[in-house]
Every structure is written in C-alpha cells, then in structure tokens.
Amino acid sequence: MINLLDFDRDGLTRWCVEQGEKPFRATQVFRWIHQRGVADVAQMTDLAKSWRDKLQGQAAVLPLTVVSEQVSRDGTVKWLFDVGAGNAIETVFIPEDDRGTLCVSSQAGCAVACRFCSTGHQGFSRNLSTGEILAQLWHAEHQLRRRLALPDGERAITNVVMMGMGEPLQNYSALVPALKVMLDDHGYGLSRRRVTVSTSGVVPMIERLMVDCPVALAVSLHAPDNDLRDHLVPLNRKYPLAELLAACKAYLAAAPRDFITFEYCMLDGVNDHPDQARALLDLVRGQVPCKFNLIPFNPFPASGLKRSPRERVVAFADVLQNGGIVTTIRKTRGDDIEAACGQLAGEVQDRTRVQLRLADRASFPVKVQAETP
Ligand code: SAH
Ligand code: SF4
Image 1 (cartoon, protein in one colour):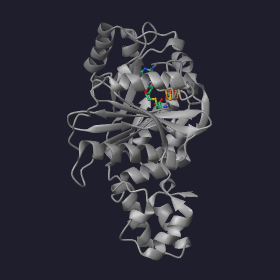
Image 2 (cartoon, rainbow, N blue to C red):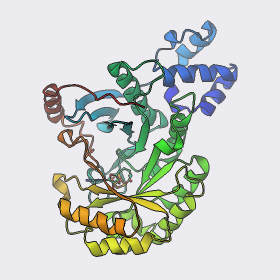
Image 3 (tube, helix red, strand yellow):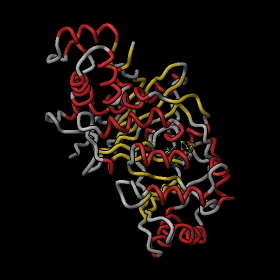
Image 4 (cartoon, helix red, strand yellow):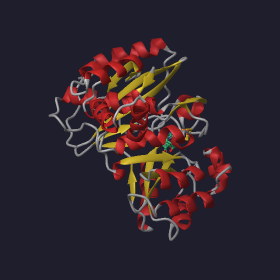
C-alpha cells in the first residue's frame, strides 16, 4: 500500500501522472489530506469517482498508532507513537500566547550519542520515513483543531521545530520532502522562518539544506572548544568547530533569518563557567551572526549530570549579552510529563509505565490553551 503521507506535492504529482491522471488531481488530494485532515479517500468528495476508486485500491493515508497522549499542567501535550518493532517516538505540542509550536521527531533513537541526551543514550534504531515525520504533524494539527474547535482555515500549529528525537540531518532524504510539505501553501503553509531544523552539526548536510530547502537553523553547540565538544557531542570529532562555524556562516546567505540560533545545554560544572561564556564570545563574535538559547539541562537518571543552578545560567547569559549577543534562557515546558528537551525516550516497551502515565493524565484538567496562529 502506498502511503500518501510519504509524498511532497511534486512527488505526489509525479505519482498521479504515472497513474494516468492530470497533475491537478494530486493537488486536490494533497489539500484534502494536509489542509482538511481527511484520511479516507471516500470522503474526498470533489474527486472524480474513477480517480477515487483507483486511489482506494492502492494508496492510503497511513497514520501512526498512538500509544499514549499526556497533557501537562502548562498545556503542553505529548504523544507517544508506536513505529513498530518495539520502537516508539514522541511529539510535543507547546502552546504559547502568540503561537503553537510542534516539536517533531526525525528518528527512532539517535546515533550521535550526546552525553546529556536521553534519546542519545538509548542508541539508534532507525530513520523515520517522510510519512512518519509528517504523520506527527498531521495527527497533532487536526486533532488540536478539532479539540479547540478552531474555525475553518485556522491553524493550531504555527511553528515546527525538528527538535524531537533524532538527528534530522542524518535522515536527510526523508526530512527534505517533509519540510516541503510543511512550507507548501497547499499543505501546512508555514513560513520558512517558522520551521526550524536543529542539528548537532552535520556539516555537509547543512550545506545541502541551504540549497534544497533553506529553513531556520538551530545548531546545538554546548561547548566553546573542541576538547569539551568532542566529549559532549561525539560528532564533533568528525566535524570540528571551525568547520561547523564556517558552514553556519555560509548558510546565512540563503537562510530565512539573518542569524543562526546556537543552543547550549547548561550542565553544572561542565560548560557553565563564565570563562566558557567569554570563550564562546571569542569563538562566534565577528564570525557568525547568532543568538544564543541556553537550555537548562533536564536530568535523567543514566546521565550522571546535573542542571546548572539558576544563578549560574543567568550569569552566563549576562556575559554573552554584555558581549553583544542576544541570549535567551529557554523556559522548561512539560517537565511534569517528561516532555522537556532531551527527555524524550520513546519507552513503548515498558507498558506499566505507559499505563501509569495514562493514569496520571486522567488527573490533569485536559485542556489545551487556545493560541492564536
Ligand atoms: N538532534 C538535534 C535535534 C534534537 S535535540 C540536535 O541535537 O540539535 C533538540 C535539543 O535538545 C538540542 O539542542 C539538544 O542539545 C537538547 N537537549 C538534548 N538533551 C537535553 C537535555 N537532557 N536537557 C536539555 N536539553 C537537551
Ligand atoms: Fe541526537 Fe540531538 Fe540527542 Fe545529540 S542531542 S543524541 S544529536 S537527539
């Protein structure tokens, strides 16, 4: 069975033409799926009957199976999806006053194995397909629209960040068509500035993304020098800082924003000394127009690491800010449901835990804050 979620519009058009259909038929189907959330071909009422019959025999929207859905006290929603063979992935919706952000996974597990990341600790299982990446957005958008009773054409999700499980630039060929559907006016119609790829620094793929589908770029830096970064983000041994920063600088020529966001996870006694903030200034100033986003480390038992105390994070931010770099400290969202950065582990095998989480959920007021797109 062909999964209609696996195609961007060009791909779907090519497939339709191969079936002997006119190209505009593809756009019709695409709009039913992504704009209206319709999975059942029989409900796509303005398609010619012959085309519907043809589709029904061989193609379908294949959604992901939901294992659990949890709603945090702060309105954050986390879905755990089963992707087969004991693997699960997680997707998180973060409502704010002026936007709704969906944090999407690109892989089951991750091969980069960053020291401070729970996904990295579980190892790599497999890449997600384009359809599996998009099924997260498709499910979240249309479910939230129904739940919030949004009027036709109003979106629940205004921003997508590829910051869930996995390294998106190590799943490049599936990622790019998914990004294109997010941007497509007949799909989710998001602006390039509101779709962010976050990477631990896969340099050759940063260079390709710039050509194939330039969207906002976030780079997970975490250290001001190669020695420490080699240890925290093992991929640094392959693509050291000088190469990474050069790729960031080059990316800006095509990027929809005129800065790169550097993410920096604050680890107690490891990378949070004011001298390290000064070293960061030396590294990036005059090199790459950037902003810093400091992420308080979200601990998990196997990491052996601790979150930097708040004062240290603030002092670190001050050094960067005084050095002329706009710096924000990320608010932790959804930590009561383990939906915060780096806590996503996709524990589908542990059914007891899932049951407990479902029980937990029942005790929360199940309400998603309304947000304006
Ligand atoms: N693989 C990509 C995107 C997924 S991780 C990347 O590394 O950028 C998304 C963000 O969460 C990254 O900036 C990552 O460094 C951060 N992160 C991972 N584990 C974390 C943790 N335990 N606490 C806080 N942030 C974490
Ligand atoms: Fe992979 Fe990103 Fe986690 Fe590193 S931080 S292990 S790259 S998901």
